[in-house]
Image (tube, rainbow, N blue to C red; front, side, top):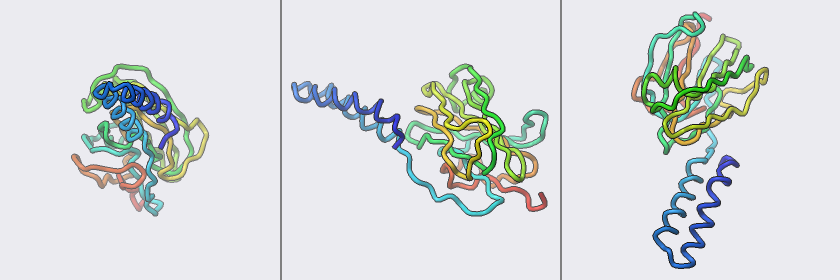
Length: 206
């Protein structure tokens, strides 16, 4: 579990126990349930990272809600958008191995993460990773409930494939921009696991 989970989970558990002791059972039960849910939300399971230098893995758990042709910084490519429900694991992982070229924070709105305009207008961290094959960019995007995006890595750090890089609290969206030298292998509506599900592959000719 992410250490931050104790900060949010322990207080309602303690207060719930106190309310139970004085026979305020309903209120105590609600707080205990809330504390246990927080621990569940901040879980951080290990993942089996797939071998293969041409693999690009999903940076997040969730459901693929959009795959579209989209240029990024005037470079042709595709965008894959993943929606994270509150019951998904909310740790983000590096989709490729390489060096973090930049981490850019953009303040913004808090539209529902399932809405397409959240990709451009919501608060987000934009993480650029330069791999041996090329650049991949992904965004940690806040939603209507998730109002805190956390990146644990900094510019110039190196990351391994599937390495933990950050977290978004309570329901959110992650976008991945892939250059034209890749082939997307997931489909819209598919459920994926961060660091484990293969999202795309680098073309063998590159």
